[in-house]
Image 1 (cartoon, helix red, strand yellow):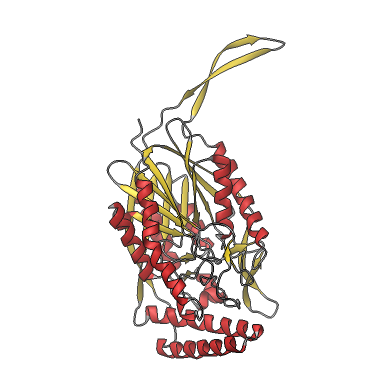
Image 2: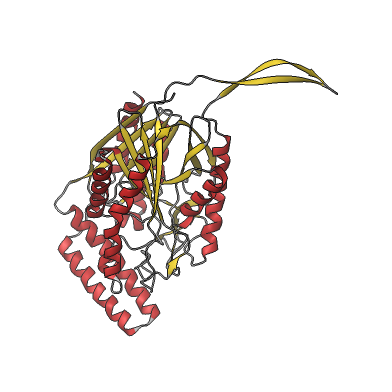
Amino acid sequence: MSTLRIGTGRTDITPAPGTPQGIWGAQTHERGVGADLPLLATALAITDSRQTALIIDVDAIGFNAEWSAKLLDAVTTLTSVPRDHIRIAATHTHSGPKTQRLEVISQGLEMATQYLETLPLRVAGAAWQAMNNLQPARVAAGAGSCAINVNRRLRMPDGRLVVGRNWDGPVDRTVRVVRFDDLDENPLATIVHYACHPTIMAWDNQWFTPDYPGMARQVVEQQMGGTCLFLQGATGSTGPVRGFTGDRPVYRRLGRILGLEASKVALSLETVPKQERLTGVMESGADIALYEEEPVEQPEPVLRIRSRMLRLPANRFPDADLLDREADRLREALREARQQGDPAAIRSATARATRAGMRAQRARLIQGQTHIERQMQGIRVGPVAFLSIQDEPFIEIGQQIVAGSPFPHTLFSGYSNGNFGYLPVRSAFDEGGYEVSVALYSPDAAEMVVEEGIRMLRELAG
Protein backbone atom coordinates (compact mmCIF):
# COMPACT_ATOMS: atom_id res chain seq x y z
CA MET A 1 0.00 0.00 0.00
CA SER A 2 1.21 3.49 -0.86
CA THR A 3 2.46 5.59 2.06
CA LEU A 4 1.64 8.74 0.12
CA ARG A 5 -1.67 10.17 1.29
CA ILE A 6 -3.59 13.21 0.13
CA GLY A 7 -6.73 15.00 1.21
CA THR A 8 -8.71 17.96 -0.07
CA GLY A 9 -10.81 20.65 1.56
CA ARG A 10 -12.73 23.67 0.36
CA THR A 11 -14.55 26.70 1.69
CA ASP A 12 -16.57 29.42 -0.02
CA ILE A 13 -14.94 32.85 0.36
CA THR A 14 -17.38 34.81 -1.81
CA PRO A 15 -17.79 38.34 -0.43
CA ALA A 16 -21.16 39.90 0.31
CA PRO A 17 -22.71 42.27 -2.23
CA GLY A 18 -21.55 45.79 -1.52
CA THR A 19 -17.98 44.79 -0.64
CA PRO A 20 -15.40 46.90 -2.50
CA GLN A 21 -14.51 45.07 -5.69
CA GLY A 22 -11.79 45.19 -8.34
CA ILE A 23 -8.31 46.62 -8.38
CA TRP A 24 -8.40 48.78 -11.52
CA GLY A 25 -7.12 52.32 -11.80
CA ALA A 26 -9.67 52.96 -14.57
CA GLN A 27 -12.79 51.82 -12.71
CA THR A 28 -15.39 54.32 -11.53
CA HIS A 29 -17.43 52.05 -9.23
CA GLU A 30 -16.27 50.83 -5.82
CA ARG A 31 -18.70 48.17 -4.59
CA GLY A 32 -19.41 44.81 -6.21
CA VAL A 33 -23.05 44.02 -6.99
CA GLY A 34 -22.75 40.24 -6.49
CA ALA A 35 -20.87 37.11 -7.54
CA ASP A 36 -20.99 35.65 -11.04
CA LEU A 37 -19.29 32.44 -9.84
CA PRO A 38 -18.34 31.53 -6.26
CA LEU A 39 -14.90 32.47 -5.02
CA LEU A 40 -13.21 29.56 -3.27
CA ALA A 41 -10.29 28.53 -1.09
CA THR A 42 -9.27 24.96 -1.99
CA ALA A 43 -6.69 23.02 0.01
CA LEU A 44 -4.59 19.98 -0.84
CA ALA A 45 -2.77 18.17 1.95
CA ILE A 46 0.07 15.81 0.96
CA THR A 47 1.82 13.58 3.48
CA ASP A 48 4.07 10.53 3.61
CA SER A 49 3.63 9.99 7.38
CA ARG A 50 6.94 11.78 8.08
CA GLN A 51 6.06 15.27 6.86
CA THR A 52 3.16 17.17 5.37
CA ALA A 53 2.78 19.90 2.76
CA LEU A 54 -0.30 22.08 2.31
CA ILE A 55 -1.08 23.85 -0.97
CA ILE A 56 -4.05 26.23 -0.78
CA ASP A 57 -5.50 27.82 -3.91
CA VAL A 58 -7.27 31.10 -3.03
CA ASP A 59 -9.41 33.20 -5.39
CA ALA A 60 -7.83 36.56 -4.62
CA ILE A 61 -5.49 39.05 -6.26
CA GLY A 62 -3.09 38.51 -3.37
CA PHE A 63 -2.28 39.71 0.13
CA ASN A 64 0.26 42.04 1.67
CA ALA A 65 2.79 40.92 4.26
CA GLU A 66 0.46 41.54 7.21
CA TRP A 67 -2.46 39.53 5.89
CA SER A 68 -0.26 36.80 4.44
CA ALA A 69 1.19 36.29 7.92
CA LYS A 70 -2.31 36.12 9.43
CA LEU A 71 -3.39 33.51 6.90
CA LEU A 72 -0.29 31.37 7.46
CA ASP A 73 -0.58 31.69 11.25
CA ALA A 74 -4.20 30.56 11.18
CA VAL A 75 -3.43 27.54 9.00
CA THR A 76 -0.45 26.37 11.03
CA THR A 77 -2.33 26.88 14.32
CA LEU A 78 -5.30 24.80 13.20
CA THR A 79 -3.38 22.04 11.37
CA SER A 80 0.02 21.98 13.17
CA VAL A 81 1.72 21.95 9.75
CA PRO A 82 4.91 24.08 9.86
CA ARG A 83 4.66 27.47 8.15
CA ASP A 84 7.51 26.62 5.78
CA HIS A 85 5.45 23.66 4.52
CA ILE A 86 2.38 25.78 3.71
CA ARG A 87 1.79 27.48 0.40
CA ILE A 88 -1.10 29.94 0.03
CA ALA A 89 -1.31 30.48 -3.71
CA ALA A 90 -3.42 33.37 -5.01
CA THR A 91 -5.03 32.88 -8.39
CA HIS A 92 -4.50 36.66 -8.87
CA THR A 93 -8.01 37.38 -10.10
CA HIS A 94 -8.45 41.12 -10.71
CA SER A 95 -12.23 41.00 -10.28
CA GLY A 96 -12.36 39.70 -6.73
CA PRO A 97 -12.76 41.78 -3.57
CA LYS A 98 -10.25 44.43 -2.64
CA THR A 99 -7.68 42.69 -0.44
CA GLN A 100 -4.99 45.31 -1.13
CA ARG A 101 -4.76 49.09 -1.59
CA LEU A 102 -7.53 49.68 0.90
CA GLU A 103 -6.35 53.28 1.27
CA VAL A 104 -8.14 54.28 -1.96
CA ILE A 105 -11.55 53.08 -0.74
CA SER A 106 -14.08 55.82 0.01
CA GLN A 107 -17.18 53.58 0.17
CA GLY A 108 -17.35 50.26 1.98
CA LEU A 109 -14.02 50.28 3.80
CA GLU A 110 -15.61 48.57 6.80
CA MET A 111 -16.90 45.76 4.56
CA ALA A 112 -13.48 45.27 2.96
CA THR A 113 -11.82 45.14 6.39
CA GLN A 114 -14.41 42.73 7.81
CA TYR A 115 -14.06 40.51 4.76
CA LEU A 116 -10.29 40.31 5.25
CA GLU A 117 -10.75 39.57 8.94
CA THR A 118 -12.92 36.53 8.16
CA LEU A 119 -10.46 34.98 5.72
CA PRO A 120 -7.76 33.47 7.99
CA LEU A 121 -10.11 31.06 9.78
CA ARG A 122 -12.04 30.26 6.60
CA VAL A 123 -8.85 29.40 4.71
CA ALA A 124 -7.54 27.48 7.72
CA GLY A 125 -10.82 25.56 7.80
CA ALA A 126 -10.27 24.32 4.25
CA ALA A 127 -6.77 23.18 5.23
CA TRP A 128 -8.10 21.45 8.37
CA GLN A 129 -10.71 19.66 6.27
CA ALA A 130 -7.99 18.47 3.85
CA MET A 131 -5.97 17.09 6.76
CA ASN A 132 -9.02 15.16 7.95
CA ASN A 133 -9.69 13.69 4.50
CA LEU A 134 -6.30 12.02 4.01
CA GLN A 135 -6.27 8.69 2.17
CA PRO A 136 -3.69 6.63 0.26
CA ALA A 137 -3.00 8.02 -3.18
CA ARG A 138 -0.95 7.70 -6.33
CA VAL A 139 0.26 10.49 -8.61
CA ALA A 140 0.86 11.08 -12.32
CA ALA A 141 1.52 14.21 -14.37
CA GLY A 142 1.38 15.36 -17.96
CA ALA A 143 1.12 18.43 -20.15
CA GLY A 144 -0.95 19.89 -22.96
CA SER A 145 -1.19 23.23 -24.71
CA CYS A 146 -3.73 26.07 -24.65
CA ALA A 147 -3.56 29.35 -26.57
CA ILE A 148 -5.64 31.67 -24.39
CA ASN A 149 -2.56 33.70 -23.35
CA VAL A 150 -0.25 36.16 -25.09
CA ASN A 151 2.72 38.33 -24.14
CA ARG A 152 1.25 41.58 -22.87
CA ARG A 153 4.16 44.04 -23.28
CA LEU A 154 3.23 45.94 -26.46
CA ARG A 155 5.32 48.69 -28.06
CA MET A 156 3.08 51.39 -29.53
CA PRO A 157 3.94 53.31 -32.74
CA ASP A 158 4.73 56.40 -30.62
CA GLY A 159 7.30 54.41 -28.63
CA ARG A 160 5.27 53.88 -25.46
CA LEU A 161 5.30 50.38 -23.94
CA VAL A 162 1.78 49.49 -22.78
CA VAL A 163 -0.13 46.48 -21.49
CA GLY A 164 -1.66 44.95 -24.61
CA ARG A 165 -1.15 41.98 -26.93
CA ASN A 166 2.35 41.41 -28.22
CA TRP A 167 1.94 38.42 -30.53
CA ASP A 168 5.68 38.23 -31.15
CA GLY A 169 6.73 38.29 -27.49
CA PRO A 170 7.72 35.29 -25.34
CA VAL A 171 4.85 33.21 -24.00
CA ASP A 172 4.43 29.74 -22.50
CA ARG A 173 1.19 28.01 -23.50
CA THR A 174 1.91 24.78 -21.62
CA VAL A 175 -0.92 23.41 -19.50
CA ARG A 176 0.67 21.34 -16.74
CA VAL A 177 -1.58 18.83 -15.02
CA VAL A 178 -1.04 16.68 -11.92
CA ARG A 179 -3.53 13.92 -11.11
CA PHE A 180 -3.94 12.22 -7.74
CA ASP A 181 -5.99 8.99 -7.56
CA ASP A 182 -7.03 6.67 -4.79
CA LEU A 183 -5.70 3.10 -4.90
CA ASP A 184 -8.55 2.07 -7.19
CA GLU A 185 -7.59 4.79 -9.71
CA ASN A 186 -10.52 7.03 -8.92
CA PRO A 187 -9.58 10.72 -9.19
CA LEU A 188 -9.18 12.52 -5.88
CA ALA A 189 -7.59 15.77 -6.99
CA THR A 190 -6.32 17.47 -10.13
CA ILE A 191 -3.92 20.39 -10.23
CA VAL A 192 -3.98 22.70 -13.26
CA HIS A 193 -1.02 25.04 -13.77
CA TYR A 194 -1.05 27.80 -16.39
CA ALA A 195 0.52 31.22 -16.88
CA CYS A 196 -1.87 34.05 -17.72
CA HIS A 197 -2.94 37.22 -15.90
CA PRO A 198 -6.61 36.88 -14.85
CA THR A 199 -7.45 40.28 -16.31
CA ILE A 200 -10.27 39.22 -18.63
CA MET A 201 -12.76 40.98 -16.38
CA ALA A 202 -11.74 44.60 -15.96
CA TRP A 203 -12.83 48.09 -14.91
CA ASP A 204 -16.35 47.97 -16.42
CA ASN A 205 -17.17 44.74 -14.56
CA GLN A 206 -19.02 45.15 -11.26
CA TRP A 207 -19.32 41.43 -10.46
CA PHE A 208 -17.06 39.35 -8.24
CA THR A 209 -15.52 36.60 -10.37
CA PRO A 210 -12.65 34.12 -10.09
CA ASP A 211 -11.94 35.00 -13.75
CA TYR A 212 -10.83 32.14 -16.02
CA PRO A 213 -9.17 30.02 -13.25
CA GLY A 214 -12.53 29.50 -11.55
CA MET A 215 -14.22 28.40 -14.77
CA ALA A 216 -11.33 26.05 -15.61
CA ARG A 217 -11.60 24.42 -12.17
CA GLN A 218 -15.32 23.94 -12.60
CA VAL A 219 -14.89 22.26 -15.99
CA VAL A 220 -12.18 19.89 -14.72
CA GLU A 221 -14.32 18.83 -11.77
CA GLN A 222 -17.27 18.19 -14.08
CA GLN A 223 -15.13 16.04 -16.38
CA MET A 224 -12.91 14.27 -13.86
CA GLY A 225 -14.69 14.20 -10.53
CA GLY A 226 -12.68 14.92 -7.42
CA THR A 227 -11.37 18.38 -6.54
CA CYS A 228 -9.44 20.75 -8.80
CA LEU A 229 -6.87 23.34 -7.75
CA PHE A 230 -5.51 26.06 -10.02
CA LEU A 231 -1.90 27.26 -9.67
CA GLN A 232 -0.88 30.46 -11.40
CA GLY A 233 2.38 30.39 -13.35
CA ALA A 234 5.05 33.00 -14.16
CA THR A 235 2.62 35.51 -15.57
CA GLY A 236 4.15 38.92 -14.89
CA SER A 237 4.48 39.56 -18.63
CA THR A 238 1.57 37.46 -19.91
CA GLY A 239 -2.13 38.27 -20.34
CA PRO A 240 -5.27 36.87 -21.97
CA VAL A 241 -5.91 36.92 -25.72
CA ARG A 242 -9.24 38.60 -24.96
CA GLY A 243 -9.57 40.78 -21.94
CA PHE A 244 -10.13 44.13 -20.23
CA THR A 245 -13.87 43.66 -20.62
CA GLY A 246 -17.07 43.75 -18.61
CA ASP A 247 -18.57 40.93 -20.68
CA ARG A 248 -18.75 37.92 -18.34
CA PRO A 249 -19.23 35.26 -21.05
CA VAL A 250 -15.68 36.03 -22.24
CA TYR A 251 -13.96 34.75 -19.10
CA ARG A 252 -16.30 31.77 -18.95
CA ARG A 253 -15.43 30.83 -22.55
CA LEU A 254 -11.66 31.13 -22.12
CA GLY A 255 -11.78 29.29 -18.81
CA ARG A 256 -13.79 26.52 -20.42
CA ILE A 257 -11.21 26.19 -23.21
CA LEU A 258 -8.42 25.83 -20.63
CA GLY A 259 -10.48 23.46 -18.48
CA LEU A 260 -11.25 21.15 -21.39
CA GLU A 261 -7.59 20.96 -22.40
CA ALA A 262 -6.58 20.22 -18.80
CA SER A 263 -9.32 17.58 -18.58
CA LYS A 264 -8.08 15.92 -21.75
CA VAL A 265 -4.58 15.69 -20.27
CA ALA A 266 -5.87 14.46 -16.91
CA LEU A 267 -8.06 11.78 -18.51
CA SER A 268 -5.08 10.46 -20.45
CA LEU A 269 -2.96 9.98 -17.32
CA GLU A 270 -2.60 6.67 -15.52
CA THR A 271 -1.48 6.68 -11.93
CA VAL A 272 -0.89 2.93 -12.24
CA PRO A 273 1.00 2.42 -15.53
CA LYS A 274 0.29 -0.87 -17.25
CA GLN A 275 2.02 -3.08 -19.76
CA GLU A 276 0.24 -5.35 -22.20
CA ARG A 277 0.80 -9.09 -22.46
CA LEU A 278 -0.26 -11.11 -25.49
CA THR A 279 -2.35 -14.02 -24.24
CA GLY A 280 -3.57 -15.69 -27.41
CA VAL A 281 -5.65 -15.37 -30.55
CA MET A 282 -9.41 -15.42 -30.96
CA GLU A 283 -10.72 -16.86 -34.21
CA SER A 284 -13.46 -14.69 -35.62
CA GLY A 285 -14.13 -13.17 -39.03
CA ALA A 286 -10.49 -12.19 -38.63
CA ASP A 287 -7.93 -13.69 -36.25
CA ILE A 288 -7.83 -11.22 -33.33
CA ALA A 289 -4.95 -10.92 -30.88
CA LEU A 290 -5.97 -11.00 -27.21
CA TYR A 291 -4.17 -9.04 -24.50
CA GLU A 292 -4.14 -8.61 -20.77
CA GLU A 293 -2.84 -5.50 -19.01
CA GLU A 294 -0.59 -5.88 -16.00
CA PRO A 295 0.38 -3.09 -13.57
CA VAL A 296 3.99 -1.94 -13.78
CA GLU A 297 5.68 -1.67 -10.41
CA GLN A 298 6.48 1.94 -9.57
CA PRO A 299 8.83 3.32 -6.92
CA GLU A 300 7.16 4.83 -3.90
CA PRO A 301 6.64 8.59 -4.54
CA VAL A 302 9.17 10.70 -2.68
CA LEU A 303 7.87 13.72 -0.75
CA ARG A 304 10.45 16.42 -0.06
CA ILE A 305 9.92 20.01 1.08
CA ARG A 306 12.38 22.89 1.01
CA SER A 307 12.02 26.57 1.91
CA ARG A 308 14.52 29.39 2.20
CA MET A 309 14.70 33.15 2.02
CA LEU A 310 16.43 34.75 -0.95
CA ARG A 311 18.12 38.16 -0.68
CA LEU A 312 17.22 39.88 -3.93
CA PRO A 313 18.79 43.22 -4.90
CA ALA A 314 16.38 46.13 -4.55
CA ASN A 315 15.36 48.59 -7.22
CA ARG A 316 15.77 52.34 -6.73
CA PHE A 317 12.86 54.72 -6.16
CA PRO A 318 12.60 58.45 -5.42
CA ASP A 319 12.25 59.48 -1.78
CA ALA A 320 9.32 57.65 -0.17
CA ASP A 321 8.08 60.72 1.73
CA LEU A 322 7.93 62.67 -1.51
CA LEU A 323 5.98 59.88 -3.22
CA ASP A 324 3.64 59.58 -0.22
CA ARG A 325 2.80 63.27 -0.37
CA GLU A 326 2.13 63.06 -4.10
CA ALA A 327 -0.09 59.99 -3.58
CA ASP A 328 -2.04 61.77 -0.79
CA ARG A 329 -2.56 64.78 -3.06
CA LEU A 330 -3.92 62.59 -5.85
CA ARG A 331 -6.20 60.67 -3.47
CA GLU A 332 -7.66 63.98 -2.32
CA ALA A 333 -8.23 64.89 -5.97
CA LEU A 334 -9.96 61.53 -6.41
CA ARG A 335 -12.28 62.21 -3.46
CA GLU A 336 -13.22 65.57 -4.97
CA ALA A 337 -13.87 63.96 -8.36
CA ARG A 338 -16.17 61.41 -6.73
CA GLN A 339 -18.09 64.15 -4.99
CA GLN A 340 -18.60 65.93 -8.31
CA GLY A 341 -19.75 62.69 -9.94
CA ASP A 342 -18.22 63.10 -13.44
CA PRO A 343 -17.35 59.50 -14.60
CA ALA A 344 -14.53 60.66 -16.89
CA ALA A 345 -12.96 62.74 -14.14
CA ILE A 346 -13.33 59.88 -11.64
CA ARG A 347 -11.65 57.46 -14.03
CA SER A 348 -8.72 59.79 -14.69
CA ALA A 349 -8.26 60.64 -11.02
CA THR A 350 -8.47 56.98 -9.98
CA ALA A 351 -5.79 56.00 -12.48
CA ARG A 352 -3.41 58.72 -11.30
CA ALA A 353 -4.00 57.97 -7.61
CA THR A 354 -3.57 54.24 -8.17
CA ARG A 355 -0.24 54.60 -9.98
CA ALA A 356 1.09 57.07 -7.43
CA GLY A 357 -0.01 54.87 -4.53
CA MET A 358 1.69 51.81 -5.98
CA ARG A 359 5.02 53.63 -6.42
CA ALA A 360 4.81 55.15 -2.95
CA GLN A 361 3.99 51.80 -1.37
CA ARG A 362 6.91 50.10 -3.06
CA ALA A 363 9.32 52.93 -2.25
CA ARG A 364 8.27 52.75 1.40
CA LEU A 365 8.68 48.98 1.42
CA ILE A 366 12.32 49.07 0.30
CA GLN A 367 13.40 52.43 1.76
CA GLY A 368 16.94 52.18 3.09
CA GLN A 369 17.38 48.60 1.89
CA THR A 370 19.82 47.27 -0.66
CA HIS A 371 18.19 43.82 -0.66
CA ILE A 372 14.75 42.35 -0.04
CA GLU A 373 14.11 38.94 1.51
CA ARG A 374 11.69 36.70 -0.35
CA GLN A 375 10.62 33.11 0.23
CA MET A 376 11.31 30.39 -2.30
CA GLN A 377 9.54 27.10 -1.60
CA GLY A 378 9.90 23.73 -3.27
CA ILE A 379 7.69 20.65 -2.87
CA ARG A 380 8.53 17.37 -4.56
CA VAL A 381 5.89 14.67 -5.01
CA GLY A 382 7.42 11.77 -6.93
CA PRO A 383 8.24 12.96 -10.48
CA VAL A 384 6.60 16.37 -9.91
CA ALA A 385 8.24 19.50 -8.49
CA PHE A 386 6.26 22.53 -7.30
CA LEU A 387 8.49 25.60 -7.03
CA SER A 388 7.13 28.98 -5.93
CA ILE A 389 8.11 32.52 -5.04
CA GLN A 390 6.14 35.41 -3.61
CA ASP A 391 6.30 37.72 -6.61
CA GLU A 392 5.09 38.28 -10.19
CA PRO A 393 7.85 36.71 -12.30
CA PHE A 394 8.13 37.29 -16.03
CA ILE A 395 7.45 34.27 -18.24
CA GLU A 396 11.11 33.92 -19.28
CA ILE A 397 12.06 33.18 -15.66
CA GLY A 398 9.68 30.25 -15.54
CA GLN A 399 10.88 28.96 -18.91
CA GLN A 400 14.53 29.05 -17.82
CA ILE A 401 13.81 27.28 -14.54
CA VAL A 402 11.81 24.54 -16.24
CA ALA A 403 14.58 24.10 -18.85
CA GLY A 404 17.17 23.62 -16.09
CA SER A 405 15.04 21.39 -13.87
CA PRO A 406 16.01 17.74 -13.30
CA PHE A 407 12.30 16.83 -13.04
CA PRO A 408 10.12 15.68 -15.94
CA HIS A 409 7.32 17.87 -14.55
CA THR A 410 8.12 21.26 -13.00
CA LEU A 411 5.38 23.70 -11.98
CA PHE A 412 6.89 27.13 -11.26
CA SER A 413 4.60 29.78 -9.81
CA GLY A 414 4.51 33.25 -8.35
CA TYR A 415 1.81 34.80 -6.11
CA SER A 416 2.61 32.42 -3.25
CA ASN A 417 2.55 33.43 0.42
CA GLY A 418 1.89 37.04 -0.46
CA ASN A 419 3.68 40.36 -0.59
CA PHE A 420 4.41 40.37 -4.30
CA GLY A 421 5.97 42.81 -6.76
CA TYR A 422 6.92 42.47 -10.40
CA LEU A 423 10.08 40.52 -11.14
CA PRO A 424 11.12 41.54 -14.68
CA VAL A 425 13.97 40.03 -16.65
CA ARG A 426 17.04 42.19 -17.32
CA SER A 427 16.06 43.12 -20.88
CA ALA A 428 12.76 44.60 -19.67
CA PHE A 429 14.57 47.34 -17.76
CA ASP A 430 15.98 48.66 -21.02
CA GLU A 431 12.52 48.51 -22.62
CA GLY A 432 10.69 50.22 -19.74
CA GLY A 433 6.94 49.90 -19.21
CA TYR A 434 4.53 49.59 -16.32
CA GLU A 435 5.99 46.48 -14.70
CA VAL A 436 9.48 48.00 -14.55
CA SER A 437 8.18 51.31 -13.16
CA VAL A 438 6.84 49.57 -10.05
CA ALA A 439 9.33 46.67 -9.80
CA LEU A 440 10.81 46.08 -6.35
CA TYR A 441 13.96 44.50 -7.75
CA SER A 442 17.02 45.48 -9.73
CA PRO A 443 17.88 43.94 -13.14
CA ASP A 444 20.08 41.33 -11.39
CA ALA A 445 17.24 39.75 -9.42
CA ALA A 446 15.72 37.58 -12.15
CA GLU A 447 18.98 35.77 -12.85
CA MET A 448 19.41 35.08 -9.13
CA VAL A 449 15.91 33.59 -8.92
CA VAL A 450 16.63 31.29 -11.87
CA GLU A 451 19.93 30.17 -10.34
CA GLU A 452 18.47 29.60 -6.88
CA GLY A 453 15.39 27.91 -8.32
CA ILE A 454 17.44 25.36 -10.25
CA ARG A 455 19.61 24.78 -7.18
CA MET A 456 16.54 24.05 -5.03
CA LEU A 457 15.13 21.70 -7.66
CA ARG A 458 18.40 19.75 -7.68
CA GLU A 459 18.19 19.47 -3.89
CA LEU A 460 14.65 18.15 -4.19
CA ALA A 461 15.84 15.63 -6.76
CA GLY A 462 18.31 14.41 -4.19
